[in-house]
Image (cartoon, rainbow, N blue to C red; front, side):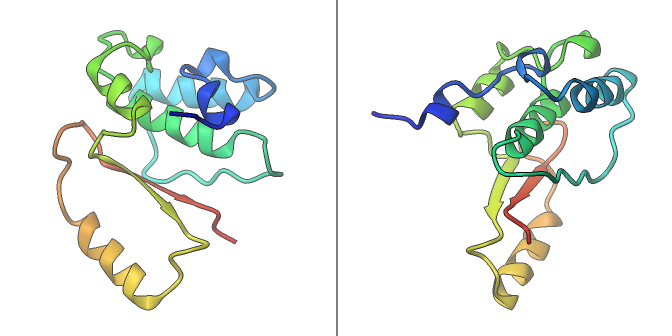
Length: 129
């Protein structure tokens, strides 16, 4: 199966992100201290790693690595499931395609459910303009 280059070479750890050290360090500190916010807004020009950083934060929040400072480990069961797109508690939504009232109602209903496998359920709402 072919894969887009940006997905094939997507960073698996915060240390792999290039050019966003101030952002990744802030997120690493939040993960290490156990003080994650309930929502994050990533904004910037196209191709700067917003979705990738959001996915890394989701991995770090649910990673099974005991040392929080080393999350995401990119090796545990949860990290591998997120990399393979089969982690049930990470939901990515394309806001450019899902713009109707019914889409928002459906999202609001789903948010009420507890995580099924991970520590936290994470929603990444991409392309919100």
